[in-house]
Length: 134
Image 1: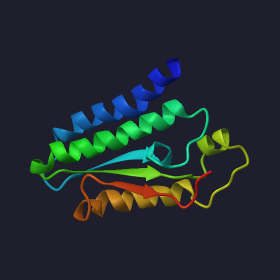
Image 2: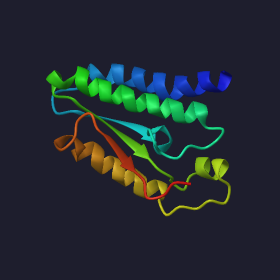
Image 3: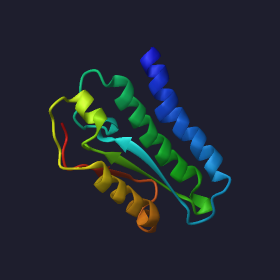
């Protein structure tokens, strides 16, 4: 339960609180992009030992979809990116020796581009950003 408490406070409650605070300053046509994981996507491959992490990421997906509905009259868009494997320390720790072509810099560039233009095409959507799953 300590793991669930820590992970949910970070991945779900932290996202909810940060969004709540930021919304006060947002105008129509603003874009909130939350970051989830392929581990939180229904029907995706699941891995033992990641119950707290994956279920918290599923909660972020649902939360983002709900915000899009609740704030649709404001003109603020909400979308969620479910990231697949990126060559990070977290990946190495979870899957020692597993290598993927996605670098942190290339993923950061993708997220930046989507954050600045994605609301033109999407609202309330889950987009799976993955070319590899361990």
